[in-house]
Image (cartoon, rainbow, N blue to C red; front, side):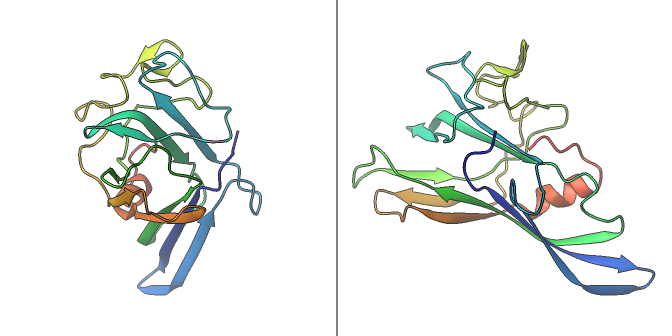
Length: 188
């Protein structure tokens, strides 16, 4: 179920023999040019066993620097990046529909974490407590940095009550895409 226009833009160089060809830009967006490999959902601490994978929207919510609603996004890259390619840059673009309940003193730091190998969540099954089916996250909310996700962000943006809505925001996810292309499991 795809609801919002997530987009992953990859710029790579296809290296053949000793000569590198011109950079190639690959734009992955659910439903565009036949691409159907995006999975997305959000998980909610207040509804720890509920799945929201079929909703058209997702919530992101923090309280005192602790996540209360988190978003999971995965783009299937299998067969889309030729062997021998060098990933020069990768950008995750997320559409911000609205900001709710933010006063002038509120702000939120948002950035993508790469999930660790074998954290293969399922869009229509995952929740705050469960990665898929009855398989638990190591820590609820996918918060364990030793087993569920890495601790370092690719990049970070700050949102305030004055941040623009109905627009894309962009994060650098180059290290994650490079790792996946090099053989790491892509769980989002």
